[in-house]
Amino acid sequence: MPEVVVNGVRLFYQQTGEGPDVVLVHAVTSNQAVWVFSGLPDAIAAEGFRVTTYDLRGHGVSERPPTGYTSAAMADDFKALHTELGLEPALVVGHSFGGVIGIHTALHHPECVRAVILSDSFFPGLKHVEPNFGRPNVWVDLRATYQEIGVDLGETVNFTRLFRATADLAPEQLKALETQVGPIGRGWLRQLPLLAETTCGDEVLAEAGLTAERIASVERPVVALYDEFSPFLATCQWLEANLPNCTAEIIPEAKHLAVVENTAGFTAAVVRHLKHLTAAPQPVPA
Amino acid sequence: MSRSAEQLYADLATVVATAFPDRDVSVAIGPDTRVFADIGLASIELVVLGERLEQFYGRKLPYGPFLAGLRNRGAEDLELGELVAFLQAHV
Image (cartoon, rainbow over all chains, first blue to last red; front, side, top):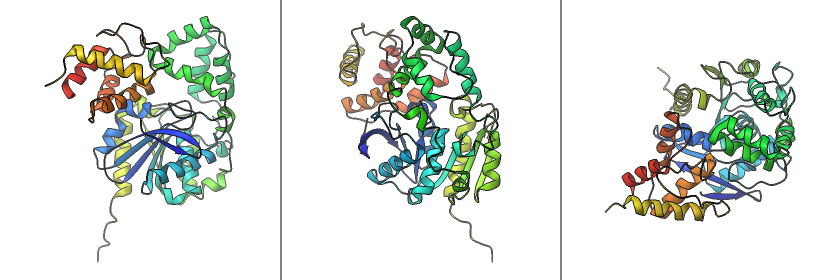
């Protein structure tokens, strides 16, 4: 896979299509395969965009340094990748933490970002407005899965605990867990112990300077796509009320991973917003 | 002239062994071999495999739509027979 070295870290990426740049940024513990398997890159490219997907540091087949996992550090990675690949100001589509990176990049490196489309992102800097922060339904589901093999991950999201608990699983526990998550989930499980060797778990939940005040100062257009059964609907409402240029939309039949849970609905919404965001300004009638 | 299925299985064995040298791919390669359950690839490695196949054959393949089609029909794994049929159609 093509690679680029940014801030001393080797990142793997893919590109498809021609036209205005769109960059898809995945979530914590995910990788760019989530986009590829959804067909989203090809669907966007078919509408006249150049789509770049990449694996964040520590994820997928990118290099895994011990530190540098805050949204601020990853925004710097985005900036360096953007420069190395010679991209135009990009429309950033970020799922969950990927959206946090998109917003942080729009603030720190606005020359790299044309607009941000968020998919069900949580912001540590907005935990005071979010009653479900730390207790999203995906964590509840994951906790239940681990409880079946006798491991308690705790009530609130704790990635470091997840990584270390997975690293410490006995072979029979790991086998039972692999059976539960299936063949595709096995690859996801396999990377968790590797992330235990890094600061990723704690750093992705750090505010890292992205305070509510800073988030509210984003001048680039923001589209907030939040899932019908999202744990972060208060965040969605806050973004719509406080950002100067924010459009919110609910993706039905999804609870945090709309690109997988409602691929058709999510794809249609993303494509529609991308086309709107790049449409030439309409002439003002005389 | 398109490559035979036999040639394509041999190609796959070569590409997989080269792309994932730290992986035990001593499993017999055949139409029923599953990339996740038998070869032990992760989903991101299946994406990498697509890139490596494009390099090997020196041409762009519609690999993204192929993988998306796999997911759309709810498949939990990919049998090499399906991948070989895809390659027969495109290389």
